[in-house]
Each structure stands twice: as structure tokens, then as C-alpha cells.
Image 1 (spheres, rainbow, N blue to C red):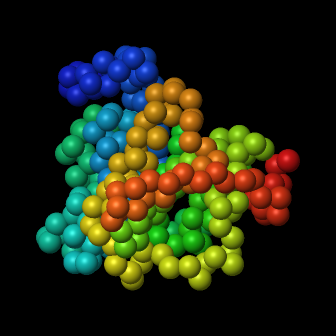
Image 2 (cartoon, one colour):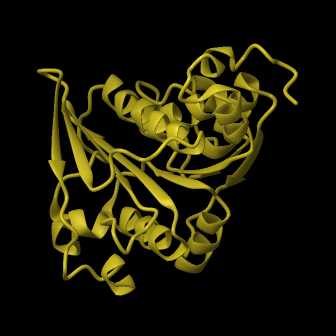
Length: 248
């Protein structure tokens, strides 16, 4: 039982969540991969909303260039591991939750294991190789994947799973041939854009963990931060997909 019973009162007042849904959130676990600008927003809202167990995975250290958008860190944290500092800040936000940290790059076997230990996976990493590996692990373990990315004034959000015989996966959206596309690493990005995407990723996760039906699978949503415009595109399950198509 939480020592702060009023923390979830606004969730409890929502008929779609209520006491039962909030209890589900409190019993759930979420794996957050990547503690950059997107991951900071994701983890902060999952923690403040009372998610029972957060598993944080990032092997990077904090750099001064991170501070403009990765708000869990400050100047005194430069050079420290992101997962360690993030865990300290999240524990301060909500001391009732359980926090686990993994400060190394996970190989496919390890990734499959830790993915299987979580109820949902949220990927805010900045490179295709990791996104593909995370997606493959979610397909094998049957876990919902919430994937987000941000670059310049643009953001992208998609939800995959959990039944990958019907749902598409990240490899249906992109292939290895797309790895030449720009990612946010080394490119400009307006500081709040990762926060916009991360906040919505946390929203998708909390709805699912509370027992609400998934409503946005097989769709990628694109955000234009200059015009403040959203566009939704349907994703077709790709017949040549080397991941989820194996399940059919």
C-alpha cells in the first residue's frame, strides 16, 4: 500500500481507470530502454503515476549536450551513468516504486530475458540497430512495444503487439535498408519535442497497464512541431518481414 494515497486520486477519478486500473498499474512493470530526452519523459511519468516496477536500461554517460532536453540530469551529473542518476531522481519523485537499472548494452539473449520480465517495453533509443533488436525481443516474448523517436522539429510514435500474428512490428515499418536515414544522434532537435513524444508514450503505456484496450496499433503517428500538426498513417503487416512474419 502506498504511503501517499492521494498521489493517484486523479487517476482514480477517471472511469476508464478507477481504483482497479490504478491497482493494475501499481502491480505492473515497464522496461524503459534509452534514458535520453524521450526516456526521461517516459520514466518520469511512469514513476509519478505509480508504475510498480521500472527497469531502466542505458549504458551511456551524461554529457553537457544532453542537458537541454534530458531534464532528469544537471551540470553536476556530467560524466555519470544516466541510469544511476535517473534512478535517484525517479526515487525522489516516487519513493514507493521499485527501480532496477541495467547499465550495459544487452545482447539478444539478455534482451529477450529482460523483455520477458516486463509487462510493457518502451523504446526511446536513437539508432535503428537497437530498435530492431528491441522489436525482435518483443515479438518473441509477446510484449507490447511503444516506440518513439524525435529529430529536428519532428516526432514519431507507434505501438506494436502484443499478438504479432496479427499486429505488425517495427521491422514492418523500417528495414535494414533504411538505416542510412538520419536519426537524432548528432542532429539538431528542439528540446521539448522528445518530451512531447515521451509523454505520449507514457500515456499509451499507462492506459494499457490499467487494462484499457489498445487503440493505436498498426499505426504510426507523425508530429510536425512547427505547425503543431499530427498525421496518422496505417502500417501494413509486411509479407517479407523477417521477425513477426515467422509467427504466421
